[in-house]
Image 1 (cartoon, chains in turn blue, yellow):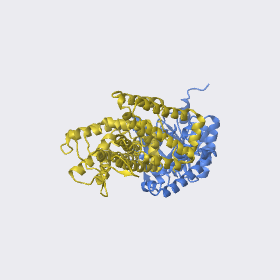
Image 2: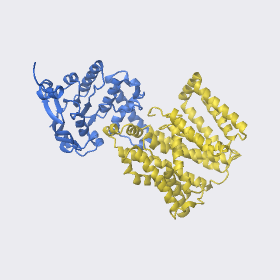
Image 3: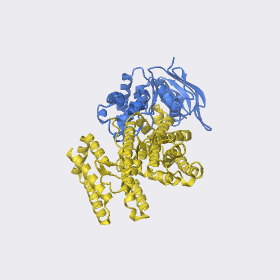
Image 4: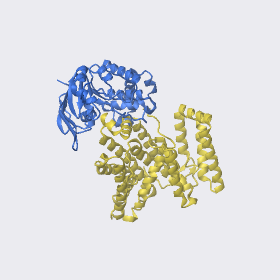
Length: 260
Length: 373
């Protein structure tokens, strides 16, 4: 059975059809690339998956359970974590805080522990900070030492890493990466690809859906690619096959009219 | 360690001197010394660094020293029941401020109905003691629960709205509360509720003038010590909640609701928790105020007081727990001290807040990074 299966997924904003009957499946431990020009519905697809947008029609099943109608926090707790195209870190909070929040749903201590049985809470949070340090160190050895620094003081690439760590901290089954290379220069993009490699080595069972504009990244990390245009799936298959499809070339480059 | 204790003792002496100085010349002199000292600490870098590291190394000593001085304050103020009362009021504002800051600062729930929730606590005490004959201490414990219950029931639908809408609804709530209290028969209308019996613990009435170590203190010193215990306990609880999963979740949903949702946090539940916990301490402060002054009436809980509570937070530092203490200890006594300026008092007060917002929006004692201690 597929880990995630979307069938006929449709999202409308008034008269605008942002997603139009998309069928898509993700297998366990697979990395799926999603490509498409601006406004083709890629991020809308993520927002529908995570419950931020309501689906007008169609069904999404995750491990056999329908996600339609669930609130975002409930979907997150089922094991779907995501990053955002433009960073959504809390810049005033510390690096550790930003990662620890990912572990919040799995906490085992409550109000009475925070106030009265403080020892239990401290023991748990110490373990959580250790795990956060471990995750951060996977990407950059220097990061754990800066754990109590506000995340706004970190460079762009480290912020993106913190955001990926936050998503991983919840121990998800499915990770959604929304254009992780956005705003990065070529060297940083190479570092990012190394980071994604580390993720798949550290968490072998994790499925990933990655939205990318950078074809170099898509080619490097995903074996299977889906192309969207105007909210519809126009191609699916290996990167080479999808990139070679006439419809995909047309979506990106415009219609070929005549050859010289 | 000596440096820490000396600093605290010196500050204590200066503050007491500033409070007790009767003639304008004496007040001017102590005020000048106080300002010069603070300026020296602020602008002489080595002094500042030395103090910061001393306080960081000897946290426990600093806290203990502060506690001893807070306990000692009624003694130099023994001759003045009025200033003992003002000091007590400052501690009531610390309690209320901690509750309100947990809502506004930590969770971003812009509650401008602080006065109404304090009023719910105060009026509950009035009604339960005068009309229902409850003992005062029990009524003081019931007051905050009523504030929490009313807040939870009325605001569940409203907590789903964001930022400005919530602020508007809470403003409306203060006015509705005032109109109701003015017009209900059973709350005494504009006259309010008079003759609320004073606190009585194990047969000891809080109106008796205590003599501690042979020093006769004004009756208000009883309330001072009780308020000190209340403010300390409140601060302790709020600090532990802030430095926990709850404080972290609330900070996250304040900064970015979408990110918080996608991290599995229920926005409604988080805000309701912050709102209820905050209202508990706001109601507690209001209930304590009612037994302290012995009567409640609508003008004691009007919108102006919501703004005073908000100012305590802004001056101290939004989301900062020590900031609330500093804010309350500055904002409550200072206007009293400058009472001789009459009408200009409130103007001065407004100017201070505008200057703060323009030049130091993080407050005098900004929030620090969460350390989970």
